[in-house]
Image 1: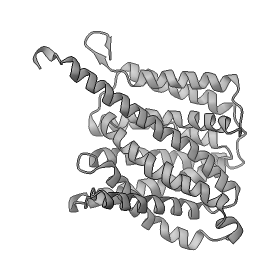
Image 2 (image 1 turned 180 degrees about the vertical axis):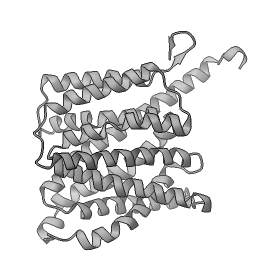
Image 3 (image 1 turned 45 degrees about the vertical axis):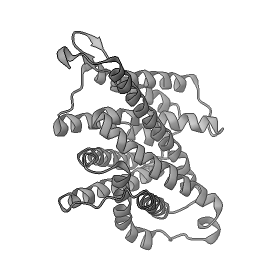
Length: 315
């Protein structure tokens, strides 16, 4: 368009598209917030991490495979992209899920774990700028630090540090790096493959990586009453269907639309979502510091999504 003019209907369409992207992003974040509660439930029941992480990923991969075949949306991987898919699955789910789940177990605090995972936006900024030349402004950086400050308020008022929390923190930081690498590779592949196909291959290949650990380490304390009961399989199915198949498919679309740096800021809301869901379910009551953290984090997310156009104009 001349002089950058765009018809009103185009602006309306762009607004609706952006609004839908944000809604889908928040849906994924809400599901991931709930995943901490379901994972902690399984850990509390003494279920092997290698068991429920493998089952979660394998079921999610099969569901997406069936879905893509049924809708005739199945895509084969190009030969040149095969190494990228192998690396993608190694970063996540293999490294990320194992290190994140063990981090939750060793820190003894799901919220502290979520707070550490919420440093993903800081690492993602560098990945987005360095690898994809994504542009961010000072307002975006301010929003990121505000959101992280809100997370600190939410997290510090919950629970005590576990006995081996330093080891757990180290594992969680490795998971953070794995997630940033995963997001960067996803961005590279999203121009050629649909979100469902990327996540499908990610989980199916990840299942191959996880299978030896599942086979040799997943049944160490096996009892039919614990492993085969509905109380165990209910959270596993929720993790597989909602937190893996649905949430990751939505998230790949978010990365494609917003980029690595801006999409990653939504991960800052995961511990906030987890705290709110726990409060709604009666697992934990939020105090005024945590509610203040929720408000600050929300403002930070809004600022992180703003862009500067022209001289001081915000959009």
